[in-house]
Length: 298
Image 1 (cartoon, rainbow, N blue to C red):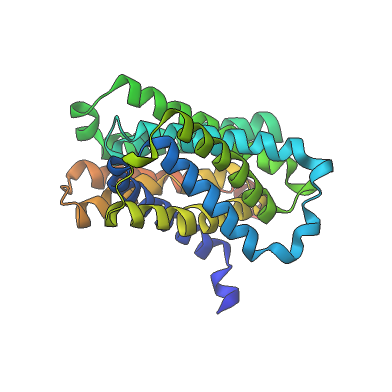
Image 2 (image 1 turned 60 degrees about the horizontal axis):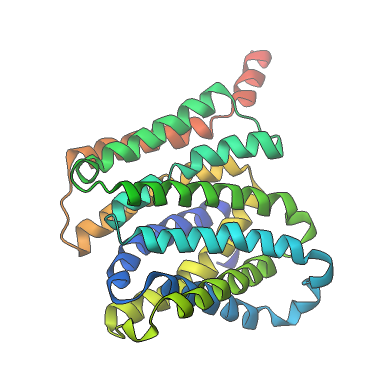
């Protein structure tokens, strides 16, 4: 059972489900909290929780040797990503915002090619583009009715910071314990966001109702600690662009959950978008070398 749960395909399915659920959950919570305080609490408490769970391996931290790497990772993967994300959700619907953020898999493929030397064949490029077109079609109604230029800009900046942050983590992953990387970047970045929020926002504006508590609890546990451990584990096991392409499904799942629980409408555009996303994932994972070997054998 444990072996099955750690299989890459199972882990990827869990990640897509967790992240897909997070967008509508956070969208429900953000009206009841200042954005910096919410993102800061989510990241900082998630880092504390993970630290408690892995405390026995604290010798792997090697702070004096790797502190710069922890700080850089925290800046891109926490301060920018969570901060921009939480602020941006106040300007756009959650599903639409997630769609725009998911320009990230395309950027991830390009950054992985430029910084890590991963292959970026024409088939893979086409697949990434098809995937992004798919999520655009799936959310076209939202794009045509709820456009905020500030929200669009924040969403794109969120995707850029996330893509670079992921590539940076993979680049330094051989030197660091992946679990401690997640925990420390969360505490550093979350602490910065929380401190900033206490200065420029008012903690008394937080409404401690069910929606806020549920959103915060989900973010601290599943959305932060569990999801990011799974994500970085998958990134370090395989090619970043392939994992990124599979996460194109996240905004589709987000829309489906919104349809089921937030009374949003299931449209033909969504179904067409899902089909294109499926084609995208197939193309990005298409093994050209395997085909070539078969031809040589024939």
